[in-house]
Image (tube, rainbow, N blue to C red; front, side, top):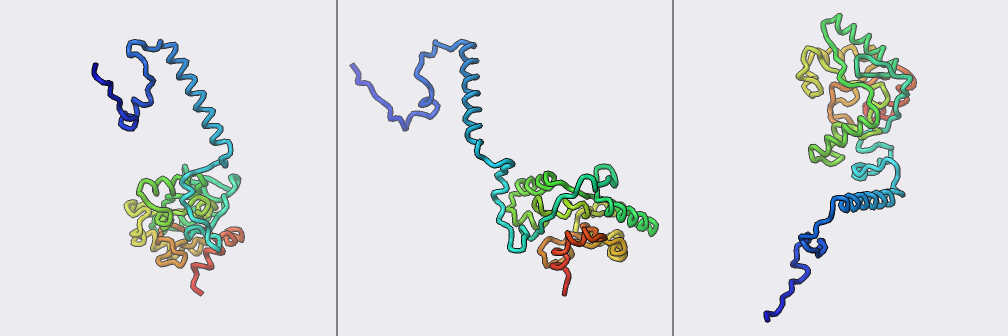
Length: 243
């Protein structure tokens, strides 16, 4: 009689090691499979609930990549900003809302620019935390960036001027190819804004080579026409204004 041979456990494929030793012709009935599947689902749900029982609400693995805020409260060079109250926001154009005061100032500025032959377009306005979260992390993951790299051109959620309802992104309706591009500073709209925006209490948030360390954004402006707005942007204003 030939001597039986054995195969070491480590050499047996994982799938075979985990498969019960049953005769191939003894197939379980459909009812048995259904019961087993239901039991497995219940067991899996119990394990999941137990594992998440002590997890903090809103846990996001991506936020664990973020460093702690700096001594002055900034995170990756961006200051923290509160969310505008829903009752203070008004729709300027479909899908874009601003704080009522900023909205009135922008519409007046837009009208006067049009009288001078310049067509200002509103590209972005108020953003809630969820929208900013998607904008920051989704693009970061898509481009394979680290948070510090992404933060050069976009604020982390909770740290965007857009949260306040006072900040907006502006384009030149006659040069849409320049939207959200540094080359926007070559447009007639930017030239007009540089000359007239201060009359409507709008300030360029991130000029070229700004001390805050945020990328140059000639399209991004914030409204500082009230004591509340001035208070919100006081730190950024102090940091970026030459003494």
